[in-house]
Each structure stands twice: as structure tokens, then as C-alpha cells.
Amino acid sequence: MSAFEINFDGIVGPTHNYSGLSVGNLASQRNVRSVSNPRAAAKQGLLKMKALHDLGVPQAVLPPHERPAVDVLRQLGFSGRDEYVLQSARRHDPELLAACSSASSMWAANAATVCPSADSGDGKVHFTAANLRSNLHRAIEAPTTTRVLAAIFADSNRFVHHAPLPAAGPFGDEGAANHTRLCAEHGALGVHLFVYGEHSLGRHSATTRRFPARHTYEASRAVARLHQIDAARVVYAQQLPAAIDAGVFHNDVIAVGNENVFLFHREAFLARHDVKDELRRKADFDLVLIEVTEQDITLDEAVASYVFNSQLVSLPTGKMALVVPEECKDDDRVWSYLQGLQVEQPAIERVEALDVRQSMKNGGGPACLRLRVVLTEEEIASVNQAVLFDEELFRRLSSWVDRHYRDRLREEDLADPLLLRESRAALDELTELLNLGAVYPFQLEGS
Image (cartoon, rainbow, N blue to C red; front, side):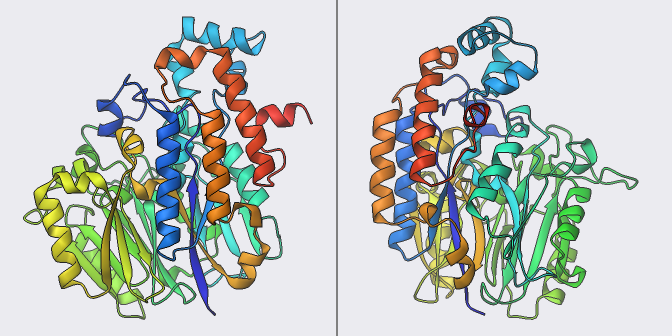
């Protein structure tokens, strides 16, 4: 059955800021307390969507979350009017306020793991919102993500929504940033590569020294079971601990795949030969494995340029495009390798460098900004049509950002009551524009 991969891009939120919350994400920590530009960040994301749309790649959008998360601050002991909650948190626990103001839900690759109907036992598309328990600022996202996905994929005859995994140590789930589906074409049976950082229950695994591993083997196994994926079509691979310590906090910082092509760095996996052998054995299609060596691009160069945090997408021509961050041009070795890749790999027709610098300064490149969802034509018809990207939606969202977003945001602005009111007004309008209904805590409180 023919199917299409739709990139559901996260819209950057109005509280986009640099608080350096993500341990192990070197760019996030390097830019801590810099002044951000939420309007520019959101515009860069929209322009990325349009660039892919113009290439013929199906696009859709996911809304940002409500921030600051006043409901979480109340849950943690702050009380009174919303304005007082923010100011009290700023005075007594500014780190907590920063966590509750994070706009990192824009990185939709972490939103959930998705299994297309071609691969699930019941022939439905399965979604599991990630619990993101490794960081407080991410762990608070799961409830809103679950509501948003349910509002967009509401047809229970075609879509199944699972609750996030228990937010306990053994089940750390970072979503699709650690999941790659490989296949002959999007509508065919696929092989699912689940990548984890550590075993947590009853089995020794190599450990990191500098930064924590976020995703567990147990979480990957649970998601594969929930999505009813045939075990004969699943591969589990552990990240190389040294790569995590070098700043590879998710697998999508060091590997990217699309259909039958998998591009990865030699330092991505602990047992890379076993991983390659198992992928070849379980793939009943012509699998193209492109292994990048330290002589091609060093691990440090990969992390600095985010060359692997790119989007490898199928074009209407039948070929592929690799969409990389503009920072790749700043490194001569990285850019030279990418130019050679187009010559050596016939499947990759072009390399496109796009400006997502506001996101990159917070530690997320083009691949972080999108959740990949494979859908048949009938399933696409069952999706909330208001979120599907076209020229008109691009125009309306651009106008919406111009009306509601600030062009300068400092960490101390997070306690500004006006910012909260601005953000809620923006999100209220957005839920109408995208036909989502009530998905945010401030909307549910008033329903």
C-alpha cells in the first residue's frame, strides 16, 4: 500500500530562551543565559517547513506547549495568583522557573515514538508519547503531548494512543530521537532500530563517565511491545558510552536514516559490527549502510556541526535530499564530506543547508524539530486537516508569530506576568487556527 512520511514540525514557543537546562547537550550549556529571539526562532522553523514543502516533502505542524507551566509550579508548592507564582518562583527558585519555562517541546523528535500501520500487529498507527524523565523541563511535556496527538489523530479506527511509560529510572524514554525505521519504501514492511544508552534492570551494560545515558533498553522493549512490532523486524543497539560523553545525548545526533539508507558515524554504537549484521539480516530489501569514519568527520566535528542531526527525506523524484544545519558550511571537512556524499551515493540527490541557528544555539538541529509519521492516503484523510502544512497555513502562522512573539527574551523575563498573558493569548488563538480544541492546562481549567 502506498504511504507517505509526513514531517510534523514543532512550532517554536513564545518563551524560547537559553537556560542551559540540558546536561550533556553541549550547545545548550554553552549558550546559557544568552539573549534569545523567540520571533526569529519561530520564523526559522516555519521557513524550514516551507523549504521542505517546496521540495515536495509532506509537512504538518505540532503546537508549542503552555509556558511558563504555572500548573507545575503550583504542584511544587507555589501558590496565589499566577503573577505571584511566577515572581515567587523567580525569587526563591529561579532554576525551577527556568525549567517550567522551557520551550523544548519544539523538538518534536522527542515527542513520541510512532509505528506505522504497515508494521503493527493490528494494522493501526501507534503513538507513545515519551516520558522524557531524564530532565524535569522535558518530563513535564508528556501530558500536553498526549492531548495534542489525540486531538490530531483522533480516529480510533486508525490510530492508537498509548500512555507514556512509567516515569521511573528503568523506563527512560526519549522518543523518536532514538528510533529509526528502515524500509524499501514508506508503505512497505520496515525494520525498527531502537537505540538506548543503558540497561537498567538485571543486566550489566557499559556506562558513561561524564554525562548520563537518557534512554533505556527496557523502554525500547516496552514501546516495541505496545506497538505490536514483530520481534523479527526489531534491532536493539546500545550507544557507545564515549559518544554520549562527547555530547551525543540522542542517537539522532550521530545517525540518520530514511527508507533504505542509513547514515551513521562509526562511533555511534557499542557493538557496531553486530548492529550492522543484524540490520542486514532482518532487512528483506537492499539496505544501504553509509558508515562515516573518524578520518571523514571526527566525533567532535559531528557534535559541533550537528551534521547527523539532519533530515534525510524522500523527494518526488524518487531520490533523497539531506537537509543539514547551516553550521555544516562552517566546517570545511564536514562540508567537503557532504559534497562528496552526493557524488558517491546515487540515492542522495542534493544537500540543502538551512538556517535554524536559534534552535542550534539551544542544542537542536533540523532533525530535532520534527516527528516523522508514515501514513497511507486514507489515514491522512482521517488526520485533523488544519495542521497539514501548505502556503496558506505558512502565511497564517507567520502572521500569528509576528503578532504575538517577542524579538528579545532574557532569563529574568520569564517571571514577567505580561509574558504569561502574551503566551496564553497566542496559544488560545493557535488552538482555534489548528482546530485542536482545549489542550492546554489554562484552557482545561476554564472548561
